[in-house]
Length: 245
Image (cartoon, rainbow, N blue to C red; front, side, top):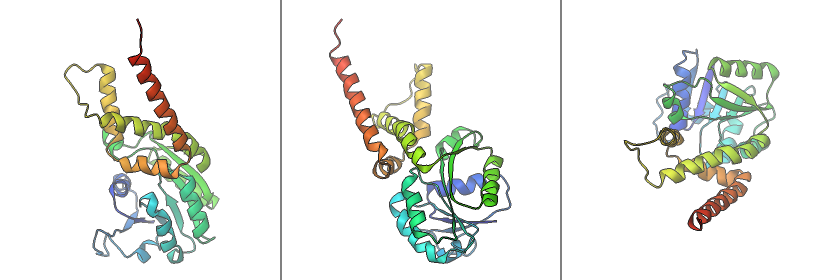
């Protein structure tokens, strides 16, 4: 099987590392604007589009342009799967611009390089959300088996369900972790157990504010959630300042 990856940023490199560590018989072909074509690892985008599975690993703001670019180049039996942290938007783009014969699966790996390292380079037990948007049953079953062979916890749900839930838990988690990290808080020699866990949590969140920005702009439910977070912060702050013994 050949997997074509468009874009070779942090998460794309992570995908390649995880799968290669499992010793599956898979050949990767990568298109990257920042890496010269060598026809060994890096190829023209037309070569990527002929792979069995094509994964666009580009920023969400470049997703539509990428799908339009590869659409006429894909083989009739190709499977395109996204890995975006928002789901409704890329699903709509793929359905709108990809040929009817091309199979489509929407996924969101609910983990990244930081949490992977924290778990000793293992994805065992991590959640991966998936929707069969337009894929043949036998292909879909094989993909699910492949993901479970990676020991991932596969959760099937619609893109709409995902975005509504992600606005509550994923956006809130990222926002809280990055907000606390922005204060410059550091570990100390007198950290309580809960403080240690908080630092572990911030380490797993990482430094990627772009994901937070993308969720806010492309997941409509995040705007309402940010208002709730702001209100909660202001109410708690007021209750502390105005506390009367």
